[in-house]
Length: 129
Ligand SMILES: [Zn+2]
Picture 1: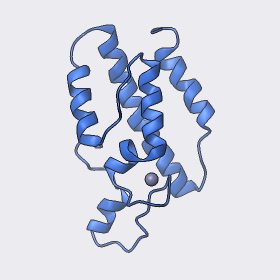
Picture 2: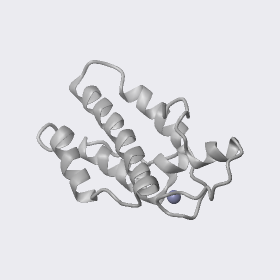
Picture 3: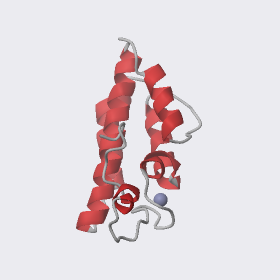
Picture 4: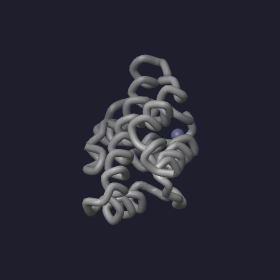
């Protein structure tokens, strides 16, 4: 869904004619688009860099298109690192969307520390580093 830009971000809902505020659930300053939500928001940019850091990867986080191209190159193959990065990518996209929906529909935030602990358990801490 995210790859095809099929998520119901506020930018998409506005394009359908809905009367909503359109502001990002994380910063409340910018139109909530897929690009902003996952990679150009100051919050998610740091989280993605942190996720990659757990995988022993260091890149400058850019926009959705650049990150997707990077992912397509890195996620190919059968190596342990490729498998780890595929898991990290999927976990990241899922958790950011879940966090966004929690904030939007429940008015609550997931606990970021629990997020990181879950991430560390699933991917990085004892596999890389
Ligand atoms: Zn934002």
